[in-house]
Amino acid sequence: MHAYAQTLVAAIAAVLVASSALAQAPQSAGEVMKVDRPGARVTLKHDGIRSLDMPAMTMIFRVRDPKLLDGVAVGDRVRFSAEKIDGNYTVTALVRAS
View (cartoon, rainbow, N blue to C red):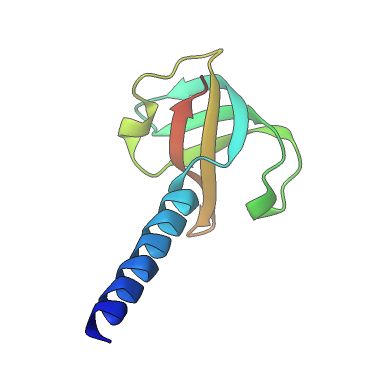
């Protein structure tokens, strides 16, 4: 029974790691319209954001980590995740679309 319990715990841990990775993966698509590195903001023309119940639009987002802006430029197609943090729409993950 001990080996079964270890296998069960390992399987549960694998599911939790996989679901955590999915939660952190960029969920929305958009195009970079402006990058404000000093202000840690990015303007995105984005598709609807289901997690925020937000329709497609162009808007300015704060970025949780200014390093997210490294490697993106105006005109780039991106995938991103955003959350409402302290009342501000904030990009929490941002990668160039392939």
